[in-house]
Length: 276
Image (tube, rainbow, N blue to C red):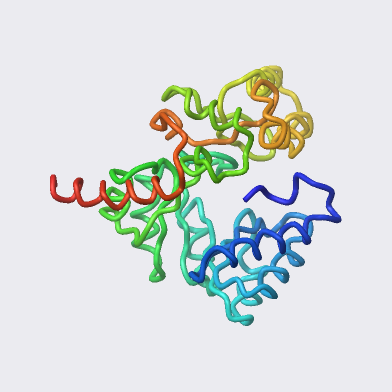
């Protein structure tokens, strides 16, 4: 679902409740909500999810000590997104039920260490006792099998699901992913507050030019903020918007339904394993 941050702040909670209820109307299976825990209204958004009976909350972009115990006391499971071993062990210590080990191949905000999924996942698996979910650079059954071979219990896929019929991002954004080559998802903003991986365009080039002239972190962040994401997601501006996506964009050649993506994972898994 599109994050409510793209609308007026006073509408965020109503939007989230609406989307959760929509999901509940479509399935009787458990589903999760992802919440960045050091952003405005994080606590309020968690409360909405808990009130609506959401059973799994994935927390990200913040200290797991803030809300992990709070969420668990309300009866929900917590999966915390981690980009380093120390983050994963801290999440486990705070009571997380699983950790998502997210490598630098993935799209969006990244760790400054930029550890690859191949390096990060097995180290996290060795360091924690809770289940580990692999993320970053996974788009098909080959990536799924590789993640399981590294010791993960499952995978998280983002970019592949951006380019699906059900995803609510603008059609221009989806087509930009489909048309992307293997080298088109670059990391920008290394000299800003947080680096991010996105498709190369006019906006990403501007960020790189600002970094080259040693612009301040504040200047760089002002160009990479939520307004730029809204340009891409809502307005379909692929030149000046922030087209967050992972390196697997080069593997994606069409827009599929979510069902087709999941079915191809299942069919492909058996083929890959039998070949091994």
